[in-house]
Image (cartoon, rainbow, N blue to C red; front, side, top):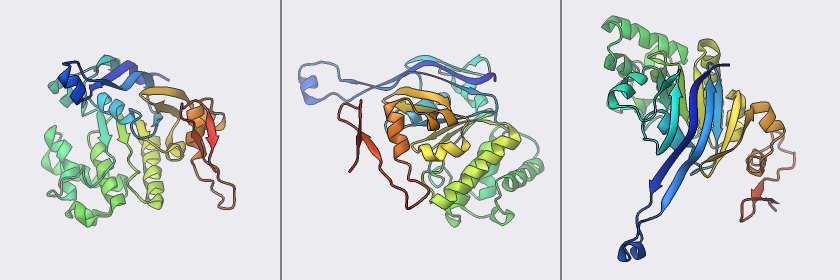
Length: 287
């Protein structure tokens, strides 16, 4: 499988604010290595799950792929083109091929716009088709994400969280992208709604062949949708492989801890989540 997205030895450092002692002694503040030498590939038509706890660097990596954050070092290649730290103009053009679905479907939607105008906005910005053609395309997209046509003239506050996320997905699909970065797209939703949105992502990927970088803190969520899984901890990928291999035979202690946190489907089964010791090198079984 050819690589659509290639991330090579990517680093992202943030300079921490100086403490009083550092200011007094005129010494520089500390450096946070948010992403520390990550390499990862997303193949054409493939879904890669990027999993890790809060602060692991996964969202930072996703924002660098989208061109929203500059790299400290390393390279990102998309469809054979080096897109490391693109110019504003190039980033604008890349948005036709790389789209994003954010975590909070309410915060990411303009409350002053109707649902129809929100989904149409990418088509307007990139001047795609005629006005009538754009409206037709919006209605087609609403069908794709199972959003009833009666919502066309409604506003985000009139929709549930699951329906708002369907609006976000339809908007991301408007320009026929080849890659979607989904950053925690179901974490703000109820469990039953999560399953519906995951089914929708899976259906879209299967029918359109879109590649996805699916970012989540929950290994249970990405199991359904991902072809391969990369487990991220403290800015580094500690385990990467086919989803069945990682879930069936995890090699890294951190992966084992994350997997143990998934509640069993059988409520009568024993549930013993594990945790790492203070050094983060060995497993301790919770009481």
